[in-house]
Length: 263
Image (tube, rainbow, N blue to C red; front, side):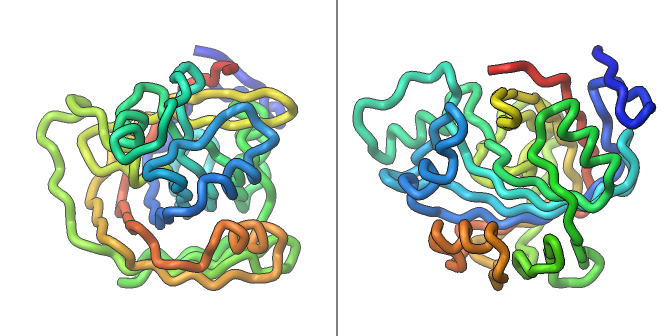
């Protein structure tokens, strides 16, 4: 356990989220384009297919957490473990091996939130790339929607159609989940994942544990409209908008964020 002082308030890790819901869409994008985006850090993307990387857009409502209630949007990429040797050749099998390698996780590239305390805590404790933004989340309707604006400019409008329900395993924590639907959108048991961040010259790794309920997933199922914000331009350079590989929704989940460790 470790204690951090945020705006005069002590926050102890692990930090707990007692009630949250989330939706996200994952896309296959060009690995070389992602490497150009992530040139500021020392991590390399996982090529889930030769020349292809996984980009996930996720929005979440944190109704009850140690940091208070807030809304969040995330842009993340699946990355290789820093300890894993670089594959000599790229193939479908090498991509599968990387997906199953311990330490493979989600690199959090951009993580805007709508509450200043959550922003300062995330940057101070875990090095999350939080920025203040305006998030309009619509999670109660049959179609899930996120309208994200930053500095009065539209970043994106993301509409998801939930898929089929997934079964819940009776014994949590017995299987390591596939990282394909990430960020933070698990499909089995009580999965854990490594989240990587890079802020102020330091790369950090944080272990997340998630307990999801009422998970739905499907191929495709996302409609995205990009705005005129620089992040929207960055996403367009990755090839968005395009058909999503998968979409996932979680009606309710609890989460635990551990103390980060430098990489």
